[in-house]
Image (cartoon, rainbow, N blue to C red; front, top):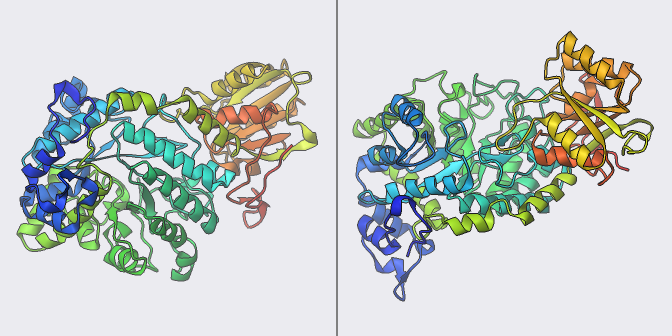
Length: 609
């Protein structure tokens, strides 16, 4: 039987035997000793299922789509209006009935992720809507739960340090633990595919889209952590997704808004960008996401990798031997839309070797484009069948034919438990990196530096964290026995704000300042320099990119937390207070601000007490 938990609205829960009977008939290959097991479904069985699907149903299986609302059947009116405007349906259930999509992606901004029980109920509503259709199939419910700065499901779920912080910790065991715990919590909420880990090797400090989402700049270190996290997620029956193939780590252009070009030679690509993807494949990765980037050394046609047959079929399938699911990055992004229209992109992606088409701007345009390409002969139905088989293999491997639903008890038993939260805290403590500690200022003594002023940048808090960063740091220091006051100065403090911070600093023993992507002409730099000029010791915490330290050589102490999520900021406070010693090591090099050809702090730099 399908383990149902509590599907919404008193849904009748069909047994697995009933589901399969409706889609393909119960065959001997699906039953052993009278008991069916989804894990045993072989290609012959799945091909038989595919043969019973209509062409529109096949097209739908290839799409993973956004949908607004906290409920599959009864979203808020504003979300109904958004769905009607963007998709032409009112609800997730109507989306599935109309297009028979094979996947749904959750976003915070689409109001899919209010709290764990709501997320589980939404997942159950989606599964019920799909399984209730003729020849209904379970749905791949996906999200971007990278941790760190990209997280769609927040507290009370457990939030971990992001990839670059994990890279600073350097522990494959921690990466695997992150994947195992995060995967267990996602699965408990009915999410069965995670678009993580990021397998990009971030060798460009100016990278605006990857940065701290990468484990670091050393391809072998990144590879080991990618493989470990993959194994962790997949041990919890959540499909991991390595991204963004063939490698998005060396670009100064954000593919959300432009079309990046990677100029690596084929040899450099093989020794740098390809290494973590090979490791992911070796670890049995369930899915790989493409990048909307051009790599002329791999394909000189001018097409983005998402639409490149030489890259996806020639290299990824052929040379690297990968036969799992290939999913596009979001088809809403400008990097894939600049050369071709929205009606051509999904067709060309399938011709290139893609299996899942993620989040097109208009599902109706994209869905009909694929349908018409098959009817017109540009795509064959057999080509669709290849991708559908990979998608169904993944659904079977995840046990979704047998176990499609979440249950309330599973949420309560798994999500945000004390043990999970403690594990996240312990991992965070191993990632905080001490870059500078002049005259042994740190750890701070409550006797000599008991009055702390916390100032600095307060970027919008990542999903589900309490924030703002200055408030979290001050509260954590207060809990550790310091008297901490807060003055948020922002990422672009005015002269008046700087003057106010300088005045406040005179009443403090020490100033802690949170910095966020400081540049040479940045007002944050002016703030820090004027605070240093007061004669008060200044401790800076880079709450995103660790490269900030190069712009601020005058501070007494500098830490890197790699993100401004609560778990990392609390760990940084414990390091500042001496409750734990800093153990992180830079996973990227920091260049000199006055001469970027020279390294200020190399990979592996990190001080301790």
